[in-house]
Length: 221
Image 1 (cartoon, helix red, strand yellow):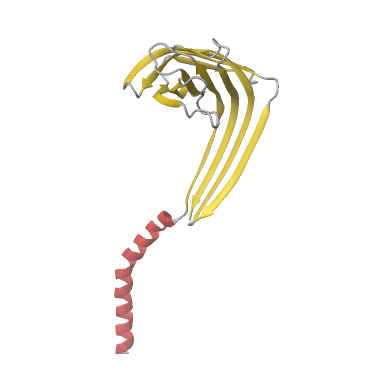
Image 2: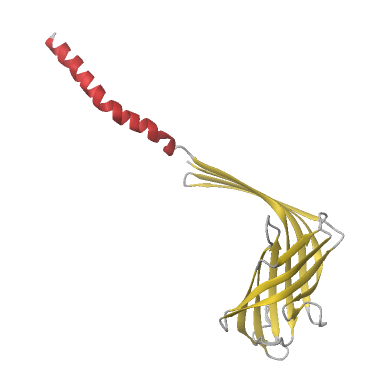
């Protein structure tokens, strides 16, 4: 009887001592569950790539290779771009296979948004226009200037679609992505600052007007 009494008393004491600990473990359990999130986005944007040959006022080099993208947001457009300025010897061109050996990079300029921009994109992706002011930062000269921008995109007749899906697994993580793109290739006209896309027969460009939907799902066990 004594042994049973001791056993019962000991069990009661141990239970009382363990209850707070077990309660703490129960409260902490949700933190050990999977980390999971889902991200969805959709919208429209435009892109442009161009090569301009010749001298530009206050810019080094005689070849200028640029890129610009502009995406519609709930407020002002989100614009990003850059221009690499090359000085090429006669008969040489930048970024053209074996050619370009006689070209040196003279400056790198970055194009960014301001609050003075308007971007309109047609619902059928047939036309778009970006107009207003951007900032251009010249890393070679370490200066930043505001420049006028006015670019129009005219979409081709054909609408292309592209769907990309993939899933990655490893290290207790699962990551699924689904990207859908619908776009028209486009012709561009206009200018960014002193850069004009069609003022010379040697200028070249390619562009797109795009609608996208994106889905991402992440789970960490």
